Length: 441
Ligand code: GUN
Ligand code: ZN
Image (cartoon, rainbow, N blue to C red):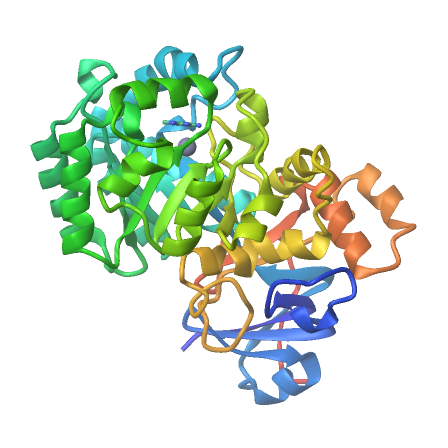
């Protein structure tokens, strides 16, 4: 049995904050403790009380005055795009053809996939992300590399082989049958293996024939507890091309709808240009509209409209979308998200921000019984944040008097330097130099 007690300022959400004064929506403890045993949080609360429950041999890691939160969750990212991030000057379809597809083609090489997977996970944990939902490449080798690495680190990761059978270079195409067969064997191999979960991943309507979307439907019917991830209404040219390929569809979402791909485990990246009918269909099916602000600004795609989703009762999530997105950090993502929403007078409250990247995203994945809070019985994926991690932040922090202000400082100026430590299944990933003491006097 390995038991560790973290000491610091705890913040864990209970529900969606209803405004700046909604102190019921979260738990905040100034001198808090989180007791972790064998990868699970066994108790959290007031340090004195938790300390009294711990064994004498328990190591104590004193993170004061830093904040201890549940690890961040990134609901849309592309693992084979770790060397595509920061590619200049193109909008979505040109960006895919010019930069992304050539880079993804290299993942047919298992040793390349393995190397990038390891470095990709290093970036996630450096940025405080403990769970991500990723597109792998079309090659099954890339999915094995992705989940092998997750298994090594005991991380709760979701992902899947991209299915794409047209409008891409030969080295990146599967067929409806091989896409189905490969996805099926990867589901059998990985879904529910340790902490891994599988996402059936037709890339988007442009790169999937109707036959491939039929096969995606067959997969989700056979494995209803898998996720579905795809892209939706990100860019005007993409929408026009999609509707020309599926002339019978009433709108973009209807393409996926006709193949039974909507539902409470369906994640639709971007979801920028939706009409009222599409929003109603998403709400009715419990589908999730995933906001990818750094990507939407970088690729000049458009502005996500959170208020209309909230108004229509659509479930939402937030994500980096690296490599269209420009940073692995969920803090940088919140900062850009705040600016996108400012343009439509939807100032994102910092409480809502930190709810979103923890419990909110966990709920979007229907995993809130396992991750996204510091509650006893959940998995010990935890991030420790320092709001004075740069000189500019330290200067601003001198005038911070409330938790909301501290959170807003973290999301506006924070980045990977603000991540003091990331715990995955109770194990520290960054090796921050910390004084660790036994409980015995
Ligand atoms: N649409 C289809 N594929 C992609 C991708 O890799 N990135 C983004 N941002 N949009 C896509
Ligand atoms: Zn994407």
